[in-house]
Length: 339
Image 1: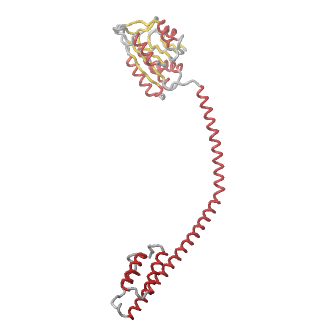
Image 2: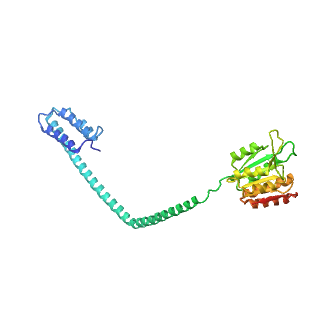
Image 3: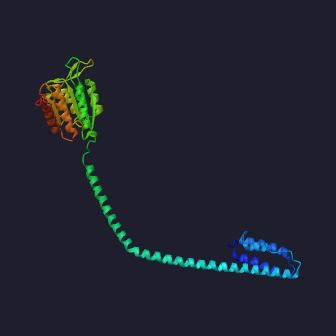
């Protein structure tokens, strides 16, 4: 049973009812109702004490003997309530004392456990400080490496290849489309396939050649078409053959010598053009004589397969020559490497 109001106030109420009980002028029926209300306010409406008060007989309040007995009952009941409240207060005090003692025990236990962990904590702190120092040293070393890398020239992320095809209508038709398809297939299967960007320009004229060089900014320029010792055959506006002479080719690639690393002329008798271009470009491949379609295609696929595997231009050239031999066609002695 719980006390609903402050204990001091509860005792004051009950003691006031005792005083009323000892007053000869007090109306016992009214006092009974007042005691009932006070007990309910102290203990709640469902308290058994309140119910026992309610059950007191009022039929003999005019009988002096019964009145004396009722007063005695009221007095004993009120005194019992007061004693209960005092005992309840003592119990609460004891609970507080016990709680404080338990708290002290828990605190002492936690303190002992903490003290036992202090050496481990100090060791962890020392290890952390050592690691932190090593981390700072590592950061410094990384910064030094980054600075060194910044001093090195920037490597190309993607090698841009510009494939130029020309097969004028007044010349023998060449299998240029087959050549570029085979090159694309080899690069797609290559280990470094993501490092190459192949763009094609067909039916090349003087104007489209210049525009493609300006727009693409290639690292490798590949020309496939007809040629002779005086130049390569591009197309005019009507699709007929137009000679781009050696001197013009040399002047063109001189303008792009800061970007272009390799020029590949897969055309007949292009050795003379290759020699002119080599004055400005590090690596140039030409043909010393007329080259059959099968040999031209075999050389191209072997050349780009090697580049796709990360090999240099000279190795790629030799792989192209071997590819012609492996295909069992003539012409392995035709390609010329200048670089």
